[in-house]
Amino acid sequence: MTRTPLIAGNWKMHKTAAEAVALARAVAEEANRRPDREVMIAPPATALFPVAEAVRGTRLILAGQNVAWEEKGAFTGEISPLMLADCGCAMAIVGHSERRHIFGEDDAMINRRLKGAMNHGLVPILCVGETIEEREDGRTAEVVEAQVRAGLADVNPESGRELVVAYEPVWAIGTGRTATSGQAQEAHAHIRAVLAQMFEKDIAAEIRILYGGSVKPGNAAELMAQADVDGALVGGASLDAQSFAGIINF
Ligand code: 13P
Image (cartoon, rainbow, N blue to C red; front, side, top):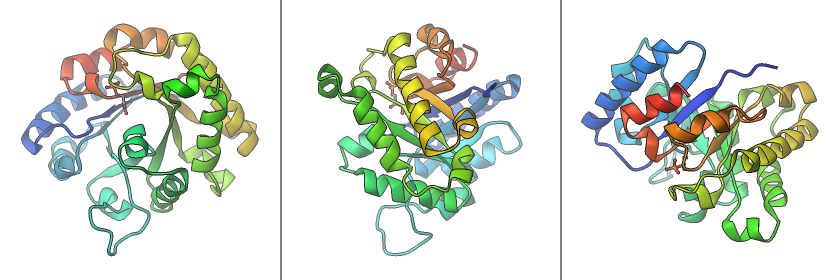
């Protein structure tokens, strides 16, 4: 099974619209040079529309950093899947560790967001990952499995192909402390085994599982070389065109 590597940049709460347009243009050029890879960015919502205009016709894929489950309504501060699609997004991140840990989103809410995205044709990237305490207690597999099962609850198995999972150990995010390639592979293999139980084996074999947490140009190749690591979800190193290019071209 060959899975096209997906290199995804999560810009988090960074970049004004003008800065975002300039960076997105540079990333789009790199994406066009690598038809063998898919490249995605998730700019802040305030920059999505101008970025979409600037990169129209390129291979660069746009994503929301989060997504609501309803099309519209009284949900102050939220962005609907319809609005993301309207801004040129094809994907949406859900369940990012910062949403879980800073903003208190739980698995049930994340599941609603994921299904909302899928119902509107957006490919969700479901983020999962253990805290350092959970790892030290030997609970990594259990925690990650529970997040995958709850996040994907009630997803029609046939739709399983239309999703991406990202393994992002909380202790590796923004810390400069990346998981070893062995730790990443172990978690990814477990996630794929869980997906095979939830969906069919051949569907699980098609789902891309990204690694996230202090991915840099210098460590990307070794992580991507692991059998079940199908790409990267990059924070800090995606904010600079050159360093992100170094990861796109791992
Ligand atoms: P860093 O690459 O900055 O560690 O962030 C990872 C991340 O959270 C991507 O979603």
